[in-house]
Image 1 (cartoon, rainbow, N blue to C red):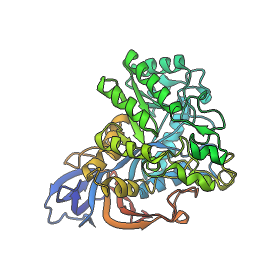
Image 2: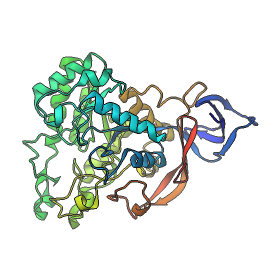
Image 3: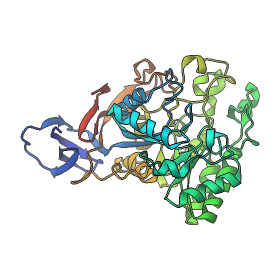
Image 4: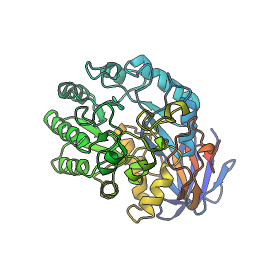
Length: 429
């Protein structure tokens, strides 16, 4: 494997150092004049972070390769600064067996761009009734640790309890899509409030999320197991998680870039680009999410990258598919809003986009310090760059990008995966 010398990188915003990478491992940090035979990457003025980790990516393969493939999603992830992504289970067929999980693992390895980590379904077929092969998926080559029926809530409390009991034996975690189907009905598609009422859109109240989270943290406390809250969207959920953590309950949580910025007023024009589950919320929820991410109540940023083919997204709002793209823009959004807003420094960005996600997912090779002996997974960020998002330039196969036309400050300059440059200045390596 080639030797790589990265010169002048600002490590987590704390000062410039050189990094020498040999055989996929950081072997020297400091002032390195030269390295025989090394490829040199000039990182003067760039912030170096441990490679980003996404806890929540929809890759659509198998079943909907017209919207995304593992290869196209991995390419988008590399450009976005990611070195590991967790592939959600709601494919067709569902990732609910060891064989299905291993297939995702192998397709991911074939890309050579990022570690694609399969997420196993909690229940067979995502139907919420019978547990999937949790133990077999964990014991397989895929070593599945995170399980989720994302897109569907594990709404049956007895099934959720059994799942938490099962994964406790091997340190697994259940990632819950918190949406009580009785409170947010089958047609709910917008935040329940004055605007949804005026637009005639079925409402999705915050309590539908908050009540499930409250139930699940109590189950986790009773069982002594780990629960993770996917895509937190309300201030009420933040309150529940903050309380649960104060009690010592093993709960973690993620927030999406779009829920940190975009608000429900964007649906006023019925643009299906802004239809997402959970829905965009009012500004007071956005403010609470930003504060919770800054203070550690919310552990991680996760993209919930959800590509869709045009014929699934370009419908009347109530009929359009839920979801937005996120892999290529997430770092820029967090830089613009959280760093630019003084809520996080670059060490904080590393915490919420690499260190904490890797810890939650049990990825020992990721989220490590930029120090001698660590695997050479890292992201170089141009903190001063401005990028105007152009959906047509995306490496994703889909174009449902809510950031199109927006200018953001801070951009990924290069991604290094296992000591190899996989993306640089937006171009795949």
